Length: 145
Image 1 (cartoon, rainbow, N blue to C red):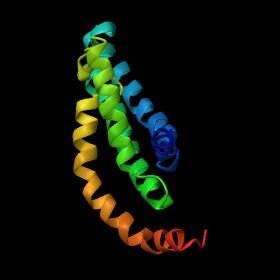
Image 2 (tube, rainbow, N blue to C red):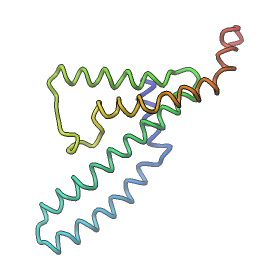
Image 3 (tube, one colour):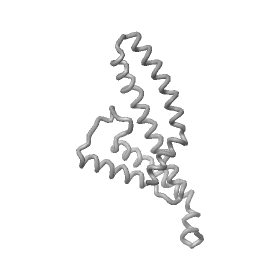
Image 4 (cartoon, helix red, strand yellow):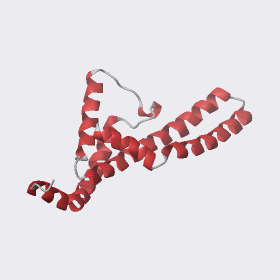
């Protein structure tokens, strides 16, 4: 649960809602101009969605994952690796259920891509966590709190 909450707080910290509104206006203007130029509303809408909206959404999700790891590390209580474990479990559950979909059509990165990125980010974040939290862990061991 901490990993999910940290991810969602990551969206808020990065102001993704505001960012998406601004980007949506740009895409809407491009879509309108393209549909006028080519007189193909459906085709231009699909192109803007596949080439703009969905990749941008996946980028923001990945950014929220990264911020969430940093937030978990800063608590000195929750292990950022829990986010990795969560996505590994979700990926296995989807595989068992036979759920397969093209990432190109999704608003979120695939669990495989998320697991790979989390593995890439974790060593640096765990090192920062160890430096940041060493005194906190010593205080806990000594019974201070």
